[in-house]
Length: 433
Image: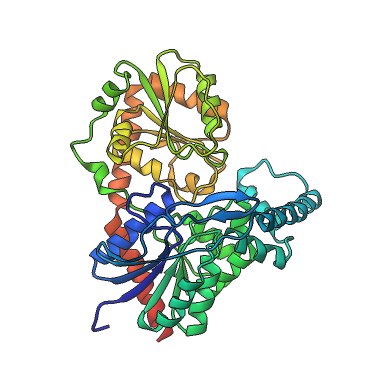
């Protein structure tokens, strides 16, 4: 190709300051590709967040300015309509009825974590297609102007990238690109354990796409096995370069919050049931260590009070303070099972800290090398025991943290990710030529 590669990226949400892992990945990947010489336009919504309003219905508040802005790439924002809450509740009731009957037929969830993703997929296979489609319309984003603009401008681009699961953008954009004869790549952020990620409509989009980008080797092999014809490629993720800044100070964080003489167990993530922060609280309670403090950082989604000794909930903090917290902690604990990667692990590793993750999350299990750069635990009792092991042994903490840091610097950088993604783009374009 004797000119720069031209790509269109379509994301439901985009912003440099957005904190969720999927939005951060979208911004960092697009920035890294633009820095590598790819000419990129981005279509996204005017929303900066999504708000559940009942059942499956999501509201997409019109909070970001419309029009075009520049950040090494052009961003065009479009308005979004919201399905009425009554429709979302009806979709949720129908979904629950069919899923409940499927679980009765299939039996209880398997205790073996390796079997759990397959069980979820079999459960979702029982969902009628109309119910699957209705749930997508309720979640959205429904942006007729964005989809119209995509149809009119798609011929300008060599390739289209679309994200995220389980939202309407993926099947809608794949359909438009296929009709226009343009190569299309899906960035699903696939959660193998999540029911809605195992949707038939999403699986069909993966098969129809020219490629799917995954963040771990597990997701790539799982999708290729689950959906014959899917071309999933593991491209990984990168750590934010700000995490390597020598100005980061754990001492500053400790002094600010009165934790100078304390052992710190850090939890980073939205305070909501899906992130299983209650499991972290239970593991810390079982640890029963008077010298330790559990620090939680993340948006308060469920607004449930935390009334537990030696627990400090800070809510969302600035990027600089978050990096100081990573530097200050002795151990990072992350209990979520619905992960496509787990940015918090490589961020902790960037500061040389050991990590503890949930063994029931297959993508987390693919990221952490158990007993080398962290521990994988199947329950809260095991987490408490591993916390005790690490807090009792500073040399082990240092050894595991340094192993994680070395792995992060060698593997998880954005230039390396951008090079892999560009190679996928070029291969898809060549195959279509």
